[in-house]
Image (tube, rainbow, N blue to C red):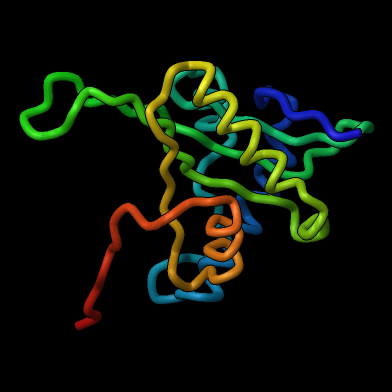
Length: 157
């Protein structure tokens, strides 16, 4: 049975491999924007992120402790902003399932866990960004009930 928990220092090597997988999806789709092979974070940065309650990272591990996926989150709240209300948002910065485990509901389990966590800390909403090149991720999020909040656009010059 899989378990979802906060990421720990011992998870860094496997999380680094998953970060590499995510990078390559983006690099293969947009090599003009994304380097490859690369990772978004270094092991040292992951140590700091894992310990920070404002950037909770959750991992899904199997019964042997192998990391099957992760969800990087960021708490956001703009108190007394000129135009934004004071709502608290949990932003999913990155959600990845090991490419060998996709289709086994690991992503859905992680997403559901993040939703429960956000409710438990009184968040108003959960948000994320998805790259247009990643159609399978977009379809997954739509299946989870997410709808567009804003759309980023570009013109390559």
